[in-house]
View (cartoon, each protein chain N blue to C red):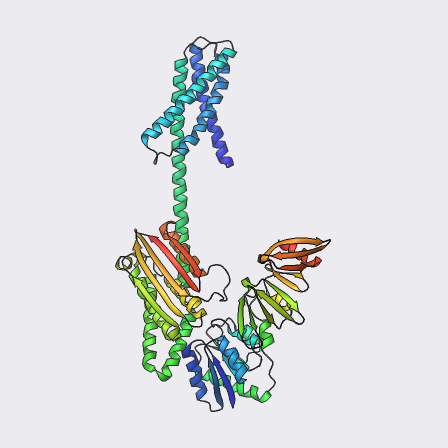
Length: 337
Length: 243
């Protein structure tokens, strides 16, 4: 508990005790007991009641207003109110008999106890509600910040210059012997970059658009890697229509080639699969990878960025997991609608 | 004749170098290699004068290839990455071609090659390259007498033992011998993971099960797989600092 909350708690105890003190002292004076004696006599039971009232905060927290049924709430708090007031009354009787007095009107004291307890419960719920809404605001703000940061990083990481240099080198090689293929390669490159810029400027795109970009990219890499790279893309209609943040998959597909295919002698298949399953969009990217490849341990920037963006857009409900076994690297994404 | 080997994992990149070389009658291509393993073998087999070498390749990168060579051809790196230029010159590479490169630039490289051929006093590149790999080292490359190459990620090394002027690397039940001193290797590895527990032993601390005292001031390290290694007094101090 922070210092701030301790102070608030002490104020709450003091306030309840004060109200209990004044009201019960008033009752006693009405029974003909001298005012000073009445106040002095009322102090210990009122303090006790203050603490009981404060403790009811924990039962309020355990029974949140929104998710607890009415009967359960009513029974629990009414029961607690009766027990608390009973305790308060008992304390009164014991204390007064110790002082050699008797309280004539015990029902009034019991009534004051129940009313005070009910007021305390109301205050607790109010405070809890204010706290919850402040927390929700903070979380929303944090996600907004995360989102902006992730977008920024994604844009920076968008174009890997080495991809461009290597592709241009391939074009230079094709010019000599296969000029027609060279022309086609420049077309592929231009289309890919144009599409990247166009999609990157949008808020959300369909998975179909993202997949189209990925196949353009893989077609270019296929020219470079030749027989070492094959692709297999399998996206069902429901998945293709779902909306995703632009360029979410692109860095992951690039990783699959750069750290996967490129790390193995014989290459293999970049396998992309997407399904809608129980309302969740599930995307899986698989590629061969050399288990002995020279990479620093831990996750790369691409995975971290994708994870950050997913968290930002889904408020933490989306998941990205990576696994690697038997020379196959796998990224799986689960995205709620 | 200047005899060349081209090493690049992309067929089109090899083709481009091949076409440029074909324009010069003085140059002969003796081998083309699609990866580092092939490159090490081809250099052994053909003893070429000149190596066109890509850096980013599967299994063995360009620098690892150099560290394994038993001959010393002139080396021209051909890569899309400019960040290795400094290291390239530190291993006495003759030149560094950035992809894509112009025909003019390529001719300039060949001119330097011809001048160098006249000098004929080549610096062996292998040992230099071995010293200049990324630190800490991520994997160790070993070549046995038969020319077979093993690439061992450092995470799979259990311990390394000194054996005369060579070292023996223990990894997953296998022992690989390499021509290098223990101190040399220790200086390349991550000091937070590999501890010199004894003059003759370098231990991967993730393999340590426990330390046993068997005489006064004398300890043995018990590894997960049951191996026991001696721990010297200085080694014990180093271990304690880390644990």
